[in-house]
Every structure is written in structure tokens, then in C-alpha cells.
Length: 240
Ligand code: OAD
Image (cartoon, rainbow, N blue to C red):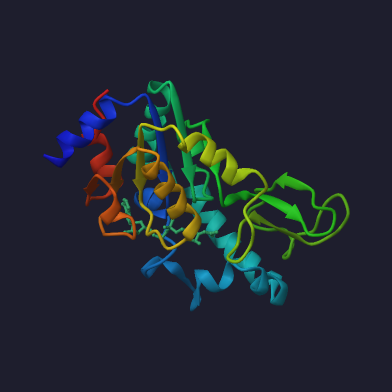
């Protein structure tokens, strides 16, 4: 029944946003941020993805990213990513807003994509601020240094406690103000900005579909909550 309703909503929409979190990539073998996969050498992800951890021990933080970059390089887009790429080709207005830094949406074919927390294969120099594609794996030096000025490189990622990249949230809000439907996939809703983006779309009148095998902070708010893995349920509701 819920599946039929979700199909109906998607069929009658023209202007669709998809908001994803770590769960969309779980079936590609990338551990989610929180929960069992969220530990590395006894460190919690939340304790490493911070500017404080990086200034204390950049080598440790880069070692963690080196491990995660290896996982991302070996992962492939799963059926959930592939359906989201098909959706982009179908709808006149479409945008993926992802919290993920793994690059799998782009590799699945999405171009209308905002990676609001950055990209694991982009670095930023902490001195000259140059932002560059950086996919060296394994690292030849740890921590890696800026090829232009020799300064310390850092992942170009929004860490806990940091501001979003300038203009990013406005771009999201601008799109979300007039969406017919928002699909919220694989996010626990523990980070406030993505939650606010979903709430904003819903407050503007968007229909909402959540896909998550567990409940999240958004489950109570959505029109339809489909409690199943994204790679299983998306092919069932996508009936183009
Ligand atoms: P979390 O790790 O907090 O949550 C992952 C969610 O995915 C959970 O709600 C799971 O139930 C769900 N999930 C697991 N497997 C799934 C599947 N196969 N299909 C669908 N859902 C599944 O990850 P996020 O909510 O993305 O930010 O966390 C947001 C942010 O936390 C990350 O982007 C990161 C961190 O702060 C930064 O690094 C800035």
C-alpha cells in the first residue's frame, strides 16, 4: 500500500529533490557514519571529523581519510544510486542534495548534485586555500602538502563545528522552495542542517517520502516512511 502511494507521488511530480545520507551507500559497502561502522581504531568518526582533531594530529586524521578513500575507490554505485540517476533524466526539475562525500552519486550519473559536506577526493590548502582534486591513494606523504605553496593540505570537507561552504545552503533552499516532492534517503537526521532543509521543503508544501530501514528524526514528519534498505525499495517504487 505504502509502495503504491509512493509510486503515485513520484508519478505525479515534476520537480523533485532527493536528500541522501550515509545509508544510500551502505549497500555499496561504505560504512555509515554512526552505528557499528562508525569506528576506526577505537576512534569515533565524530571525534576525527573535526578541525580540533586535525590541528592536534593531522597525520592521524589523514590516515583515517586514506582508509576511507580506499573504501570509496573500491565501492561501486548500488541499485539505489542508479535509480536516483534515472530520476534525474526523467524529471524536468531535479536535484540531489547529499551529505555523502564518497562521490557515488556522480559516478552513478547524477549531475544535478550538491555535495553539501564536500568531497573526499578534493583537498584544500590550509595556507593558500587552493582547492584541488586530490585522489592520491595511498598517500605518498602523510600529511600531504600543497604542490603550490608547501602548506598543509586538508580534506575539503565540512567538519563538525564548521560553517557550510558559502552559498551552498542558499542553493539548496532556492531549489527546495518549490519542489513537489522530497525523497529523504538513508539519513539518521542527527545533523541539523540537512534536517532543516527537509523540514523547509515540507513546510513549503512538498510531499515527502523517507526510505530508511530504521526510524530517523524525520520519520514522524514525512507522508510516507518506507522502512527498508534503499537498494531494495527504490527499484520497487520507481516505475517510470
Ligand atoms: P548516519 O550514519 O548518521 O545514518 C545513516 C542512516 O542510514 C541511518 O539512519 C541508517 O538507519 C540508514 N541506513 C542504513 N542502511 C541503509 C540502507 N541500506 N538504505 C537506507 N538507509 C540505510 O549518516 P548521516 O545521517 O548521513 O557529516 O549523517 C550525516 C552526517 O554525519 C555525515 O554526512 C557526516 C556526519 O556528520 C560530515 O562529515 C560533515
